[in-house]
Every structure is written in structure tokens, then in C-alpha cells.
Length: 439
Image (cartoon, rainbow, N blue to C red):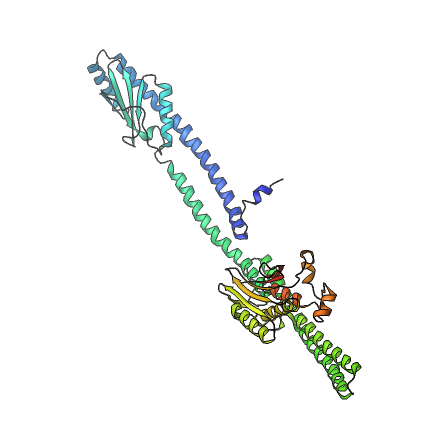
């Protein structure tokens, strides 16, 4: 098992974990030092100071015991009380029990030490006057109250060290927090630039921060430049391939049009048309992100336009519920192409198609449902792969698909930080394709 249970309680973000690494030792040291300080000052020192005062109190008690009557006792203690910086009075009604303030930590030690060594002690008052201590003792001449300065039994300002420690810790924590935020800022900027590039956007980025962060930032820029060059070279190559292949296909079409029509020439013309369509589909898949740049778009408008275009093409498509605000930043042409591919795929295998949208704070989901045969759950992962044709006989009956419609939609979804989910339609009974786009 190890420390797996601890992972559930640990923070997830790098910033929170770094703050925990910073604060945990500081708080631990603070607690240890405070405990040791309180143990030493509030207990040991207070107990030692109280013992010193007990000798003087015991001396006053002996003077009272030696006096023959109360008047003589008052005279004798009055002579020695002033030099001892104490005041002695004979009272009739003492306070009920020992009293101290709730935050008076050293008062507990004072009361305990006095009770351990004064057998005639009746009560200790530490609450009436916080700077004075009053001890009530039972003597043969009556109840005697001895009052002296609190500073003689405990430190008068022990809280100053704790206040200084707390203030210094808070100040250093704030300084460390500012420093930590400054150190983690390059990490967040690099993550934002990498996430944006994964969605087809180039954010301005300059390596900053520590040496390791600058090295990681430079490596990211080199990688981004290489990928951009590869995309540009691929686009140029595809443009050349498209031009080179279209030229012989055009000559073939022209040559076949000049030949007398027959079953063989008609079959060859259909083959040429199929080759053109397959070429267009392949180039459409290979062009990828080269369609357009990311910009603000409204997926609800894209869904309406796609449905209208599908209706004009003769498909039975219904616009379902559009829930939420579909505005986001992305590639509208790429999303429209993915949505059109999903609608055409649904119309190819079904008779009814429904298009809907649901938006949340983090993502937008475009759903396309049909009443066709659907795709078995064990084959849905294979269906989104390029050139995957799950049932050749279906394609022969319903058209010569090349297996790129779902792959193109999946590629578009991934470039927008989302995914393509295939499932079963609850309303129509066929396939449900959810194009999920992250905001």
C-alpha cells in the first residue's frame, strides 16, 4: 500500500505542492521551538521563581505563628513586609477557589507550585489584578492575604518571543510566497504556450526564469519551430502532389470524353471520378491544421449551417437542441469540416440524422445521431483510425468510403483539446458521435 492513501490528500498543482514544501518545514520548526520554549520558560523558569518567593512567604508565616495575638502578628509582619516588597492583610472572606485568566499559561504552574509547598494555602488569586498575586493562608490568628508583584513568580513579557517568532515567520512566508510565485510563473507560461500550440495557436513566448526553465523553454521553441517547418513542408508537398495528380486525371477525363460512349468507357469514367474523390478526401485528411487559423467562432451557428447544407444536399437532417453558449476560440473551417463528415457518415448508413449541441464552462459538445446499424462497442476504437473500413459490404451498398470521415473528425477534436466519442443513440437507436471541443 505504501503512501498511496496520502496522495488523495496532497494538492495537485505544482504551485500548491511547492508552497507545501516551503511551509511544512517552517511550521514544523515553529511548533517545535514554541513547545520547547513554553516548556522551558512557562514551566521550569516559573517553577524556579515561585520557589524563591515561597521562602519569603514561609518567613512571613513563621512571624505570624510566633506572635501571641493578631495585633502583635500585624505589627511583626508590617515590619518585614515592606523590605520584602509584599503587602499583608488579615481578611474575613477569601475568593472561592483558585482563579486565573484563561490565557494565563504560567498561572497554572504558579498555583501548582504554591499548593505543593504551602500546606495552609486556601486560595490563589491571579485574575483580580493581572500584575499582582494574592495568596490566602490560614493561620491561628485568622485568614491572611499576602500580595506581591506577578513578575516575581513568572516572566512579565514571555509572549514577546512568541510574537517576534510569529511576525518573523509571517514576513518570511510572504517573501517566500512572492519569490515562489515569480519562480513558477515561467512554468505556467510554458504550459500555456504548449497547450495553445497543441490547439493550433501560437502564443508569444520567451524563455525566462531559472537556468533549467530557460533550457526547457528553448527546447520547446526549437520543437515548435521544427513542427511548423514540417507542417509547412507537408502543405507545400501536398499542393504539388495535388497539382501533379490532377493533371493526368484531367487528361484521362478529356480523352475518355472524346471516345465513343460504351459500357467500358462509362466504367472508366466512373473510375476516374472515384479517383478524384479519393484524392480529394486523402488531401483533406493530410492537410490537417493548414485550413485556417484559430479565431473566435460560434459552434451553434456552425451546427445550423451544417444542417442547412445537408438538407440542401438531400439528406434528412434535423437540428436538435442547442444548449448553452457555443462561442469559443478555434478553427471554424476545421470544425465545420469535421461536423460535415459526421453528418455525411450518419446519412450514408441511416435515414434520419439529428444534430445537437451542449456547452459547459470547460467544453462544447457537438452530437450527431442516426438511426442506422451503429458500430459495435468493441470496434469503435478501430473506427476512428485512418483508412479503417469495418464492413466492406456496407460501403459497397452505400458508396465507396475510404475510412477517413471519423479519423478527420477525431483529428480536429484533438487539435482543439478534445476528443471524438462514439456511442449508441438513445433516441434514434443508431450511432451517436460526440465531437468534444475544449474551450
